[in-house]
Amino acid sequence: MKNWEFSKVTGSEIAIDERLSDMMGIVEGGCVYSTLFEYNDNGPKKYEIILSMYPQENYRTLTNITLYMKDVPGASAQAAHFLGDRGINILNSISLDGISDTIIIWKVLADLSFAGEMDILMEKFNALKEADDPSVSFIDHIEMKPADIGRVFRTDAGKSKTELRRGAPVTLKDGKYDVSKEYGDILGDIDGKNILLVGDIGSWIMSTTFFKNTTSLRKIDVEIPDCPGSIAQALEWIASKNINLISVFSKVKICYQTMSLELVADFANCSLTEEQFGKEMGEAFEKLNGIFTVKRFEELK
Image (cartoon, rainbow, N blue to C red; front, side):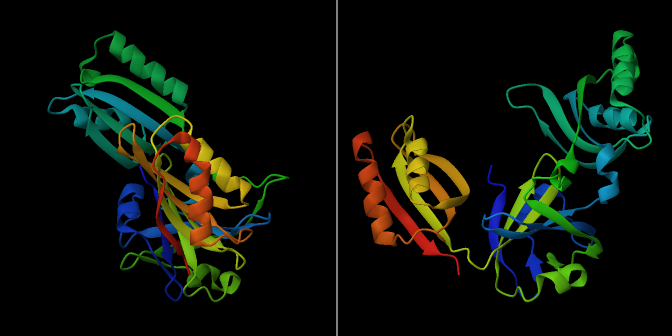
């Protein structure tokens, strides 16, 4: 699943890709919480803004809950009652029918601030199941684990990023997030800047990355042989040319024959032109006796 998109800032507004906003639960008219980080290493990132629909102080009690239920009327309602009756606040969630099975899988991001410890909740559920209690008759089993969203905010010694500010919530309007209200004094003039939007599907948060002025981004689509080792060989060759990969997306085109790689890379330390890139990478693939074609090579200006 492709959980990222590249975009440009318009004025001081970031247009949140509709597909990503749907995946991450970034809701039109909703209050978006944010935190700004600065990167201190030699990589291509300069700033990053983490966006979410819930405040940072709640992160420590957020929990991922997966409920496996019978595919019958009332199953979801029963599961919601089980959680609600125990003080579990459902935040973002998604449910779907199990593939090749007769179950419904409901993935929930929940706040356990008023519910107690996960282990105690699981003990209560298991006790009800063992007693054949009708209140959980449609629920097969439950999995719980900490969301650990706080990991993205850790800035311990030796880390490459520094937290600069936690912004007040900003209303998402017309699918756009205006950074000037909270971070304009730090980011300055960002009109026309390239940004990378990444959705953390398991945590329901979104990252917006601003690149350094020295970064030189290229968008590259290549077709390579669909065989063991071809991706490794491609990425090793790219690394040998001092090309820093920002994103990689691979897809099979013709099974066991051809696959495509969609790459976005930083060419700040590489001077290869499109012609040179295609020629030299093609030579690296000769021994695989497969197809190699550069389908796109363009600069993200």
